[in-house]
Length: 171
Image 1: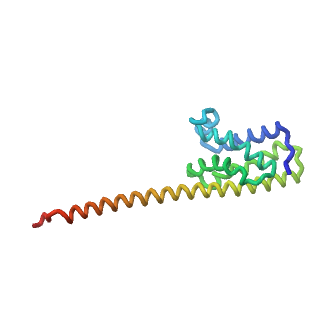
Image 2: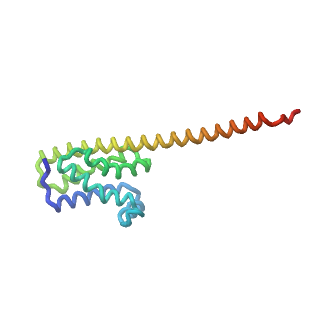
Image 3: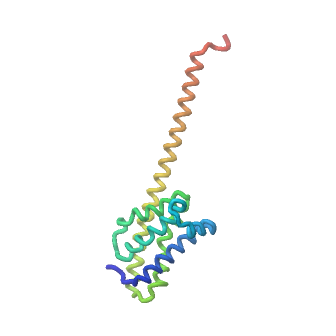
C-alpha cells in the first residue's frame, strides 16, 4: 500500500530529511555538504542528495528495504568509515517519522502507523548495512596487521640467517 502524498509533500519531506542529515555534521562540514555541488569534490553530499529520495520512496510505497540496500550502503558506508557510533550512523532514518508527521498533516493515524512501521524496518536494514561495513573495516585492519607482522617476521628470519652464516665476532 502506497501512502498518498502530493508531489509537493514528497519534495518537502525529502528536502527536510536532507537538511536534518546534513545538520548532524559539524557546522563547517554541513556548510561544505550543502554548498559543494561537485560529486567528485563532495561524494558524501552527492550520495545524500541522490540516495535519500529513493529510500524515502521505498518507505512511502511499502517496498522491501532490501530493494534500496545499495542506496543505503552509499549513505551508511561513509558514516561507518567516519567512526560514527551505530546510533549516529543509522539514526538519520528515524528522523523521517517526525518530518512525515509535520508535513503530511492530512495523513490518518493508520497511515502514520504504517509509515512508522516501514521506517523501523528500513532502520533495521540500515543497521545491517552499517554492521557489514564495520566488519569490512575490521577485516581490512586485521589483514593489514597480519601483513605487517609477516614482513617483520621475514626480516627477523633473514637477519637470523645472516647472523648464523657469518663468522662469530667472538672468535
